[in-house]
Image 1: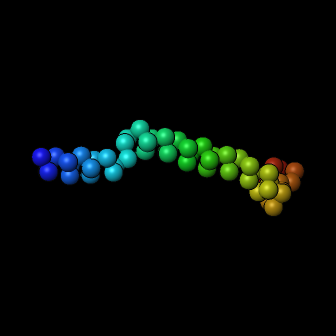
Image 2: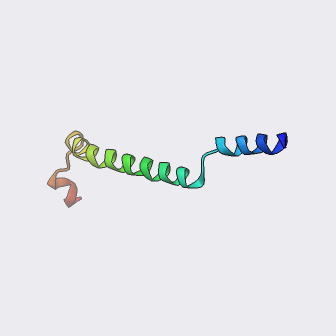
Length: 55
């Protein structure tokens, strides 16, 4: 009896695969949004000229 309750309490502490998947999706969406919002600033720091296309 005691052993089952210990195992149950340990299993409840671990995150479920669905929770891990949700967190991964949230992290990737936040990362991609951050990169997308940073792109204009990167373009301002490193502007491309027409001469760069001719080379």
